[in-house]
Image (cartoon, rainbow, N blue to C red; front, top):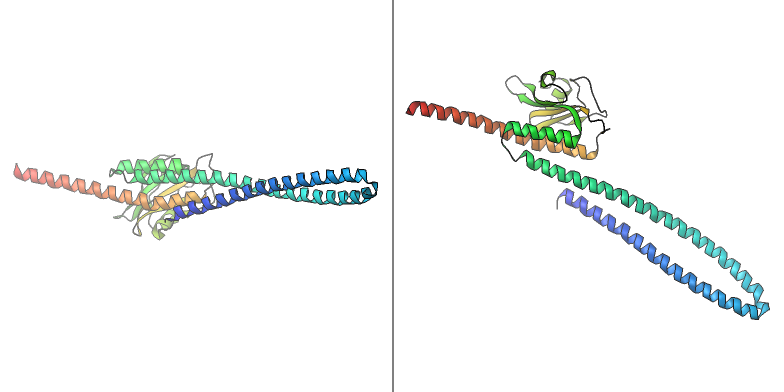
Length: 272
């Protein structure tokens, strides 16, 4: 069983337990109500008996007062337990909304992962990555970098929010972005924007088997997004692996296509 399946199973068991506690509390209320009705009927019978025998009235009155105090305490306890159940129901409703949102986000992650590996066209892969970062991360200003192995520099190949030419090339191991890619570790700062294009608020190295081939650098978030959630960090991890693999495969395919066309052209030249 995968980690996500185990989480969903644990949540389902938690919800069942909450529902069971609510059901048991309801059954207790019903039993208590039946008991109180029986006690009331017995008290009425005793009251009628005492009315016929005045000597028992004082004793009955004392018993009634004690019973009233006992019932008042029981009512207080019931109200407290009812408050606890209402709080549990409120917590359950909140958790249900959170789980629904997480399930929806996980479904989006699955679709995004599938789309990344559905094509070997480099431009199409970059387009899909851009859509994921916009729609799922909620980024407004960001760039996708690929590593130029000849110059050992990170070069921007796609951007959103600003012109591509405004994003600088970054030496591997230099600056926030270069160090993040060199260490192959995603970094995230508790802020929503940065005007300095050398200081992104999120760096997601794109790695294939511990080999960095590029990065996604986010510099600003959409207005309605005020920070990063745990799911965002899961998304960063997914992008760091799946987006990197998709880009790596697309680049290899593009290079092989160019070499194949070159070889085919050379063969055509020789045979003509």
